Image 1 (cartoon, rainbow, N blue to C red):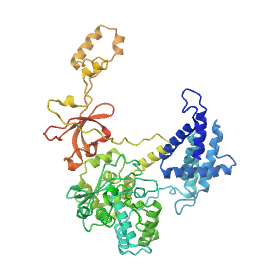
Image 2: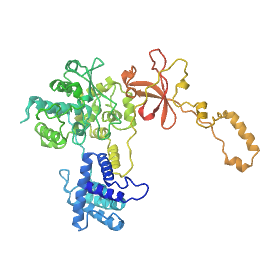
Image 3: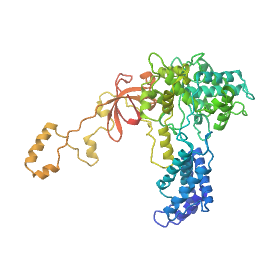
Image 4: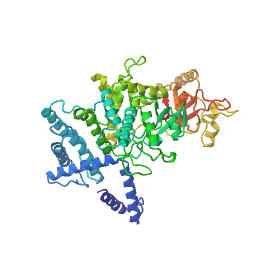
Length: 585
């Protein structure tokens, strides 16, 4: 269908005879350009999202067939009242004929019908169809929801969150895997599932981050870095065997699809023998059992099927593969009733609840909800600020504390709060709305690579080194005249008083006195080490340099380093950086 849309667009553009025509007289080149642009536009939406568009459009076609009207609506004019009636019928038709997605429901949630209609609108817009105002159709949804609640009770639309695993359930899953008792599973598959479970239990990794259905940037071996006594080492088998700490770089996620926000912020784990569900020990075993050449670590997936045909680089598994095997494992270890309340996503919930339940002398009420946001990798400034104050060993200790705690021991209110803080539902809705073009919600600007801080040189002042400092000679060379500095506040007030006496009152009133501008106070920040990869950071355990940031212009701040010195003992020069690249303390 998209190819037909592209051909129609190319035909319309070929008829353009103005001076702004594209490839005039060259229909082949014009068609190739339209096709290339359309292909890139399609790639902007995830494969799973594009599949949902087609799902919604198929329901739209069924609804239109039911009233004997074409699915493709007019493209030349809009008869809004008629199109609103057709769209409202489609929502009612879908709500009546969809099968319920949750067990125990007598009918499908009307929100699913609304979602299908919005997806179909995207397809129809590609055809150039004129569509009614979405608010005219939303009224039908509200009425359908009221009838749905009246028919099935006021709890029918309550969210069905996945339950966490209790400590006893975790031990049952591990015992079944380590005994190799799953029928038709080899020893390698038992080990691989145990590794994947430990990984998600400690990192809160989603299923989509481990699988490659529509995520080519799922977790790879290159996301792992090994340390011996605080020193980074090359991933040889001997070094991995002697490693004492593991660093994991996050992969692209649902809330951060391009890995711009959390890609440079790491997770830390200690290798502690005998630790319950230790991700560091599980990945150490994986690396030793399935060695990967250092040159292929960017290609080698973290999770793969060990029973598949041998290959130089194994293929990552699909979500269906992982869901099917994990579902069978839960039923065998926990029973059907407990398994029905849980899924792979429950490991994220388990980590959140275990952190909340991890009580000690320093945390008598458990870990804070703000800290849970960090481990859930919220795409928010607050989460990054908390991470900036979190040392590597503290991160690892929090994970170990969560492994000692029982996620099933929380009261219902605390459990709900933990669930809501591990999964940023508002962010997901924002991203989904932006993808569906309902609202222009844009993700936060990612920290771009900044220039290296210029070393201080003898004979140069700090003002001369500052990027963007005003230079009257440069202003003169650009054709302008250097402006005289503003008078002191007291002198300016005196001058304003003398001028006021010599002009008419109306003129004086039309020129109110301007207050002197106050210079904003500098704020303490952490400059992440990733901003200057060629420099060795010896502060804050290598996480970044302590500095002060003063607002400048165009969204940038002037960063003055607090302690950083060069080899000669001179302070690093101040640099202008984007505020989004810094961690405010």
